[in-house]
Image (cartoon, rainbow, N blue to C red; front, side, top):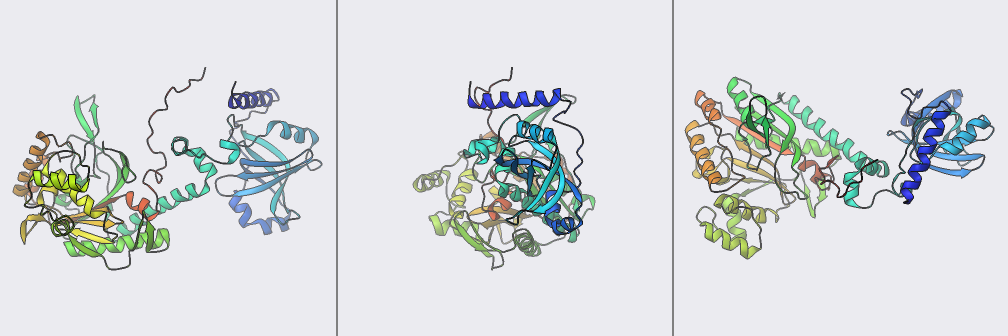
Length: 491
């Protein structure tokens, strides 16, 4: 029998003993009347009043023995010390506590506040109750999980032993709150568009497939936050909309990529490209100041300041300068030779995919903040043609720390042009490009009715992970994990 089995068996016996005494170790109600943070914030006034208080929390440590023990409790708001001493509590309650309470249990205690000789804020336990008897011990007797795989798989334990991780997700919630407040102050309306689609649109990625039993049709989980739906709303007369929601892409994992993540996209009718760029800078600076308290960051091996000038890089010229390849003129064979020469791995053998891979190599050399502009038409099928060069589009990417952290378009609203680009994407799909964009002919029909000039922009939680200097997996509450091999079934 393993040590864990011995601990579990011993704790299960304690559970049974409590129940024999009529003390159900998982009661519905608690008499807690103050959080531990409130206890700390109001300690002096409660101490002066002599008022009895009831607090509750998980036992993180127990030290001492015999007639005196010190406990550290944590209820998710803060930690607080509780002291149990013979003479302050009935003997049978003291004995029950000593024999039944383990580290990891969640308990309720009542008593008066006092300061120890060392000046530690504490509560003198006069009574106690078990709220949740832990059967398994906390990892490594409260030293925390070390293995990354285990940390992600048992995230709840990771957060118990790593308070900074919990703070990260509090900050992430603030991140999305700041985004919402910024957009709503600018007159944007929050909308919710379908996550199940007949055709995926708005991005280039391989989708997840599913089946609708009632309609007997195959569907896809969306790969963008309703881009083509929000554009339909522009045609319908809405002038500014946004959505924050989950998207799904059946692609590989990396420090910057997950298969399920949160994105934001907004669309603004009658907003021109230059005004859109200024609003993006304003939004990023607002996030930086309100969430992180600074515009200066050191992350992923780069340094940048969002309050500084945002340099503009031309897509074709930048690649030419860094690799000596003109992607507008180069053949597939020439692109392939250069990628192999640079040691760049790429998926798919289409010119679109190889061009994109070559740019990603160049992107790693840019700290930012910067805008990448003038993307070739082939890799921007939903963006307006650049009137100065019809081989290019009115697209921009936000570049931070060598990565794309946002993308915008002067949205294509010419139905004839859009139809031709969808045909090009259709050919890419036929050639085996799983990430090519699915044509949406109903969307083309909408454009034939007329959609106003529109600026669209989106970014995902990658922005938060970069500003927090974390991988996107680390900044995800419960990242998807492969099932554990040879999982043990409870008998």
